[in-house]
Image: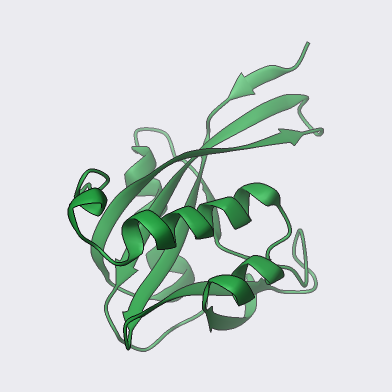
Length: 152
């Protein structure tokens, strides 16, 4: 019987630019797991670390950007990991970031700021596409609804 674990997090980075929401997608290096695919940020949670801390650490490590606002995206991404016969549940976070230079981490070859349609067309998994749509519709433009999801 597969186990159920929650030891990873997903982080979606967005910015507000000219009354539009753009998502940062990262292209994994060809020689890395899932090479040549566009991704948000996925990261292992370290011992003693909260899910939010892991997501922020991964964001800074992968991009060098600074978080302006942090949100729970009210979504748990789920995948089956055949290597450990486990159903993996990953809490999803959304981060608005400040403008600044981007410094890609070593596992990434390129990046793109994409509006919703382009972002969803580049992402592989339905859960990733759903997260982008949800973040734009509920959180991206701010307002009273977004405040329910704000962590800080």
